[in-house]
Image 1 (cartoon, one colour):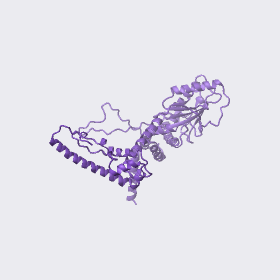
Image 2 (image 1 turned 90 degrees about the vertical axis):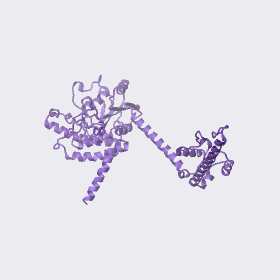
Image 3 (image 1 turned 135 degrees about the vertical axis):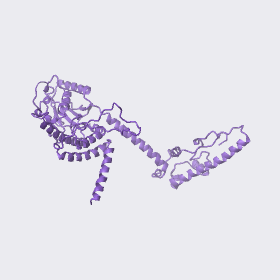
Image 4 (image 1 turned 180 degrees about the vertical axis):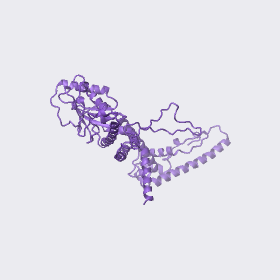
Length: 456
């Protein structure tokens, strides 16, 4: 290493050269100390077996042992950073560790040696953490891009899989393809569909429960088959009930009772019209006419009791039971999602999990099922001269829509509390925002233990 590299000019005065010489001696001593520390640290961490296991050539090893190699094994001159006066700065630890790790890139370390070297561990951990984060982001991105309409090869768990459609005509296939195009183009944002290429007669749809109903944020799956008589006759529709009766029109055996499907009496536009009725119309009708605000009045003959005191009270009781069944249906979908919809189930409940849990808590506090759940707000700062987080045009909070305590079954809170705990765990696994509810659970558990201890 020459003085020119250190920035000492050829025309410097003798006093400057003397000062530089002193600085040079001090710098050399510091460099030797740093090299010795690196050497000692490496020897202590890697062990004597490392030098034998490193695949070095004989000349390289000899030069290194004799100290004759100008390029130090752990510290190269070009890695030093000098200021304008020729003095080197202290090394940044992260850069230095990276420099050491680079030295071992092309060497064959024996098994277990890397685990004994702290700076190799740190770098490997950072790389693994970064890789894991990118992988999770990619998975979440893929799931959030679940298409509303798509074709798949086939279904293996479809309700009508074992039922052959029989012989069909060319017009039958053309009409189904026409329905496919309508679905792909005009599906509402809350309905998703998959159709099978190998079995044109099979279709699966999921409908997200509308807000303001006891079905809100739930996922309701339907299997459909276009029979050989389609479109002269409506398609066959089966509801994945899980054995639960969540609506007068949706039976626990999977039957869907709807005039448009010919499973209930109807007249005029309520019935199937081969020239005009479509699969899109069927799905929208199920969402709008069946999964509504007060499904109790869907029962034939009960509509006349609407707006009466007794009728409204019974409708609210029915909503309580319906929401409990809807929560159970969520658990069924989470634990055993229908084929080709696992990504949608995971992403949907990851996004809506917090809202569903907040609704459960709100209903257990005595509010009506289906009523608007107040959104959580940031703290307001209106005191001591601090500005408030709410503007003058802020919307007022919705007033609680309380249920008459005498009309609510005491079993409602007990059942919903149990379901709340199960949903909390399932949503947490799916990555939903459950931090608030988990913290409350821990706090409640501690208080219960303390109370039990005081009374023991």
